[in-house]
Length: 111
Image (cartoon, rainbow, N blue to C red; front, side, top):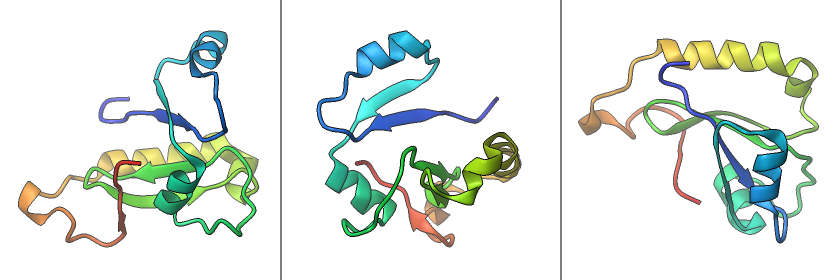
């Protein structure tokens, strides 16, 4: 889709990213992050039990608009749920650079 990018990040210890990408023929970028830093980014306490995958949608202004973990109801109809949020985000306009960060929501940052 035009204007849409998928990124994947492994947070497990010693991930075998190249093997995973080759096995599943992934057409998008895959990186790694420390679990603690990924949890901080997502706003998850270390006490919160989470299940994979973790999914986050970031709008054109860099704000986190939705996030889910593997045990959320979101994944019961993942394709439909994904399509709804992706189409909504694609239809929105980005704010001019001078107004970014002024919109509501948690601002995305590098992990």
